[in-house]
Image (cartoon, rainbow, N blue to C red):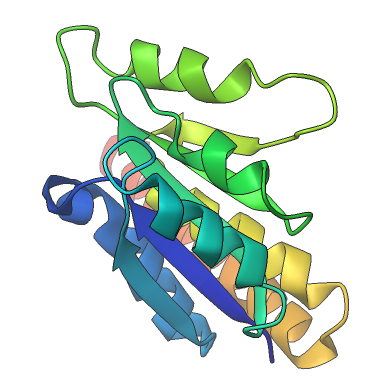
Length: 163
């Protein structure tokens, strides 16, 4: 199975990124977590993304706040899917990071999830890998079914309380 790279621009992003790691672990997907800055360590960012396919990665998740160029900097050096997580790290509540990530130029796509949306980033990466992995696809189907069952149980509790 391909690995997922989880890259954050600063170790202060770890609380936002942790749900991605937890979700990948729950699904049994191997991953590596790194701190690499698009601005302070651009050589390392370029090396990671240039070598990601050769190093066994199937997708990259990049989390950054403020001037969130990490996902774009990584995407510029690979044709692997890159998924941006916009970190709510400034007075603009993550909108600056969101706009920095979604406004990529034609030819360098970056998928995006919600501000602080690490779990969905991990699930999107898993869905990308599941295209070629039936066992992973089944785990994702089971996870969705479990989530549906939990909502149905809560619905039954609320109906019983008020009806």
